[in-house]
Amino acid sequence: LQCHWPTSGNGNGITTSTSQSALTRQLNSQKQQSVTQSPSQQPHHSTSRKKQEFTLLSEIKTCLSSPTLVSLSLGYAAMIGVVSSLGTFGGAFILALQLFDDERTAAVCFGIAAALSGVIGTPLGGKLVDRVMERHVHQDNHNPNHDHNQNHTTTTSSSTSSSPIANTTNPMGLNIDPTTRNTLLSSLLPRLNLLVLLAVLFVLPTLLMQQAAFFLSFLFLGWTFLFATQTGLMVSAMLTVDRAHRPNALAFLTLTSHILGDVPAPIALGWIKDRLAPECRIGEDGDFEDPEGCAEEEEGVRLGLGVAYLWMGWSLVFFEVARRFAKRGLVRTEAKEERNGGGEDGYQRGDGGKDGREGGNDVADYYHSRFQNEHSIDNYDYENEDDVHDTQT
Image (cartoon, rainbow, N blue to C red):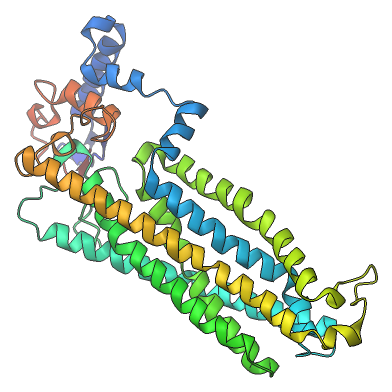
């Protein structure tokens, strides 16, 4: 409970805080009483919290039990594997294609194109996610059946706030429910798939290009679309699970990308490149073992590069699978809300849902229940302090 109390005068310019001290003593007394209560006297929220014991095994089980998160992680691993592979062998590829005569120049130009695409693409993807989130917030605000004061977790903001969503329920905040999560996922995942598809369409023409400027330009555009998916992927991963499991969902996404992505993919792509263009193997001195023979194996080099590009097709497949799982979850939760009378289930009542986790904030509900009756701030005698304001719960 956080209260902002302004000072008030007694008429002579002398500041008094009698009611503030009295209220503080009363709240402390209630806190001590709640601590000394026996377990049988504690509210049901305490029992719910005891059931929420997070262990490594339970968190792994939670992540694996979300088919949307698993599909999303597999698609992300495929994409990260391609990015890591091209980052490892990109300079060797464009040098073998005879786009540059100097290895250092080839590596620098390729690195600059990749770095700029990440710097530009990532914030553009974040802007896209912001627009999707804000659109759902505004739709929620115009929904006459939505109550922004439920679950005791809505923060009352200042009337002078300039944010367009300052006085709304944040989709990534405490009040999010499965219906909202699956709705956001159903909106984000098709956009992520579109970005990956655009990336593939822009990089594929580089297999036929003979000039370095065009090659790097199309590669830059393709990677810009690819990096624009990063923010959406992180947000989507958090939306696949309940609020308490979001950190481990991101950890699961990252771990999967390493185990199935950027660790084995460069090894596999390097092996494919050496098989398709054996004369383009890089020796201990950092040069091709047979530069003249490598120039004759340009077709094999382009074919190896094409394999890397097409590997991103797995991202398209798994992101679409994740979207279908999210859509199926949305249909199930909407049907459940209809059976429960238009969505008046545990998520809106703030009783924690059927398992005590997916609804409101247990800690906030517990302490609110301690003071909402005779000890409520609204029922307290402020001793003529009429200008008390800005109370935030």
